[in-house]
Image (tube, rainbow, N blue to C red; front, side):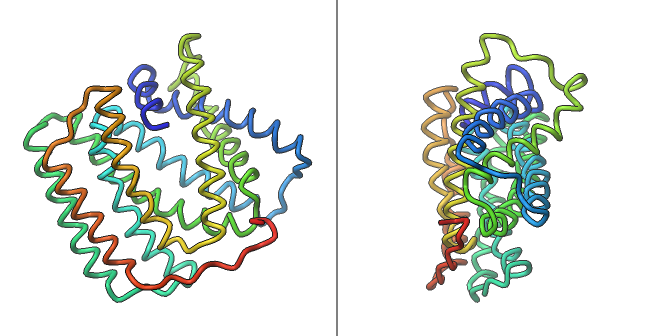
Length: 275
């Protein structure tokens, strides 16, 4: 999805790419949701749907805006701070017990970010690159908040409902700004937009199912595998080489986060909605 959305963001801007992906995703997932007997959620679930879509919307706009200006592997690596931030937020809002190694892991990960950022900036010294990296770091903070809300959301709603309302609320939030920030997509872009919507919807359902069954501090670290796919797709699709500073920084960030979450993590109780 990131590779497809990077192409769309370069062509039409991140706002238009996220808007049309959300609208097509909401239409497709809504048809499936109501065909399977889905009902409008109660007040508690609806509040969470709106809150998470708002936080996630800020994150995806910042991420895809930055992704259009920064190589894919570096972009994904810069968002790896999100799991560490999620560790602290999980302890604050979800009552998850933090391991003592979190502080040490945080320091190691921050060193990794410094190595990556300073090293790559010295090679790609451009305003666009710097602004893109700042947007990606801000996206990681917002994404961490969305992970915590997803953990709460997944306890109240089934994965299909989560995916549908995420796209629906995000599309509804962005649509009023369409006349200023997004035009109608070109016919040639429709296959890519549909593909992004399908990938995004499947991803949302899988994430919702996972976060209903295990703690946020464990699951967030699994997302580091995204670096491998970002490096491969960035090279294949956009001809982006992965620099030594990106590898070194990503390795330090991943190591720091793995140190932070070491030790047993208790599984979450399964809810009726998650089942």
